[in-house]
Amino acid sequence: MKSVEFKNVYMKYAGAGDYSLEDISFTAKKGETIGIIGSTGSGKTTLVSLIPGFYPAAKGEVLVNGKNVNTYELSELKKKVGFCFQHYYMFKGTIFENVAFGAPGATEEDVKEALRISQGLDFVMEKSGGLNEKVSEKGTNLSGGQKQRLMIARALVRKPEILVLDDSSSALDYATDRRLREAVKELKDMTVFIVSQRTASVLHADKIIVLEDGKMAGIGTHEELLKNNSVYKEIYESCTKEQ
Image 1 (cartoon, rainbow, N blue to C red):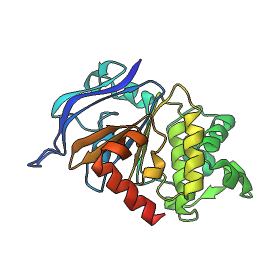
Image 2 (cartoon, one colour):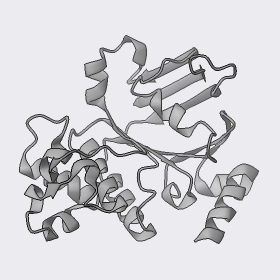
Image 3 (cartoon, rainbow, N blue to C red):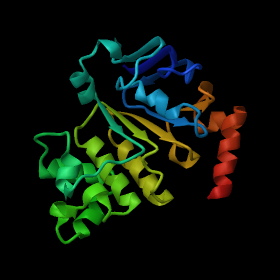
Image 4 (cartoon, rainbow, N blue to C red):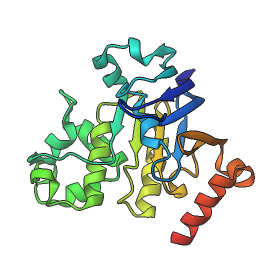
């Protein structure tokens, strides 16, 4: 079953002269993990922002479960798509309140399960207050990696059909990032989009979309792209040197 489909999609921000995305076409099936990779400014965040309807496509169609995103009620689409942004928003309150934000009725078990998948449960339960540990305004009493794990848990706790992780593991070490991806992979019915600048985060995706200047420079598995795609190979070699 098709979960997300892009059909010849073009996107232009208001007041911009050039398209940010041009002629993007691909299909993500239910349960697949899709990696989105490319350099800064290649259009990665723009692409995934079209899935929950944050912006309209200038041309072409973005479909969720076969239905154009523009025809959904915003509340209905919000239930289907969990989106974890690059920049996290934390407010003054408890860890439970921060994770359960936007998921009315979430139980303690729901929050713990979301934290387990996001690799945040261990550090939370080590806190003296556990789920009731206080979070300061903007989460200044937490590390960058801890905040990212709480934000991923916030996206997961609503149990969305589609999960978008927009460069949301950049503050995690490689081992934690790997455990996160393995745990997310267990969610068989959830379609997952992983946006990253590092190939380690998308190595095991069912498909990897390579973006360059708003255009698709390639699509395939890690092995296929490494063999046949010069843009992906360059990114991979650069990441390998950094590691």
